[in-house]
Image (cartoon, rainbow, N blue to C red; front, top):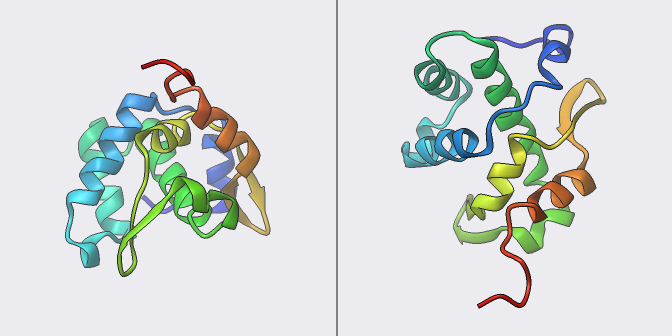
Length: 130
């Protein structure tokens, strides 16, 4: 499931249902750390969405953009370093990754970070409710 920038643009606006995106990322996180590579992510996406489908391609594209987003300092407050090179990510952030807008920047598919964070807030419980 190799996506070039030309083919990626066809999947930029395709949303992955948030609960499915969370399941996909959770399944990826269960893999041994060294096994989370492009081909294992693609294999898992094909398994979850029944083959090399548009939804599988969109999820893989969003997974790649989420990995790039983890390097953005604006996400530091949403992620917690657990072990070397491993982070904990709230389910709300992963759910938002299924629907937040994607853009092409410097020939890479990335999230608009403010839009990703805004989308994340949709999956948070209202403040002040116990």
